[in-house]
Image 1: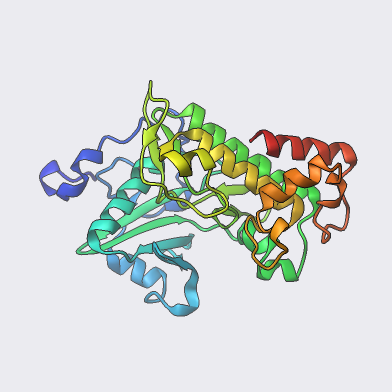
Image 2 (image 1 turned 135 degrees about the vertical axis):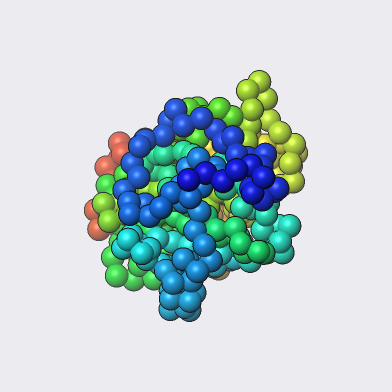
Length: 311
């Protein structure tokens, strides 16, 4: 059932009318068997006890990610659905802002290449978000981390992940009103399922860009190496910033190199600068990730590099 407006925490009264669900699907399977208890008109309002039980009291063994935003735990709901629980650890004011940003950005949005936000917990000072659990790691771990030790992503798998990421960005930028600028597209925010479908995650830095606005002025945020120079220099943000980050991501996937790597020679520290130099010197065939068992054809490589450089 829905709460009367008088019982809704004041911080959220202005986001009870979230974006229309014209792009949403009716797929509610992950929440089957759970009572619907949401004042936002979507998802599920979990209690702290629900999530404490789901994560085995937020056990260290269930931690699957952590950073400045807080900690993400693996959990299982009472109906058996596996979930990822994001516990926002910043001070209450910052936690409130990050919570609101993610709810506003993707709370009522459905796309197969976006991680689905299933619900949330607002209890005392606690702010938590509950997402579908994506079971095959993230792109960063496949390229540079622990998963790379066991297997290298094939060229086809890499292109499938990138195509899914591109489709999700096109949806955020072109199908929604206001459009959503993610602002932190990077390998660790691209989750991968067991069929190597990409799912963009972590909308804590996202910004909305309303109709008629070519950009918004905002504090420069993002991850060094992925941030568009135009945005970094001016603080003016629009969807092109995500496109630049996607181009860097594409180069990272082609080469297997980090965007910034201080362990390399000075001319190779910055991936974008090094790649442009290699292409200018007609040495583009030398940039392919040496860990690939099957190299792309010359045509495939040229198309991928051209796409990246256009971003």
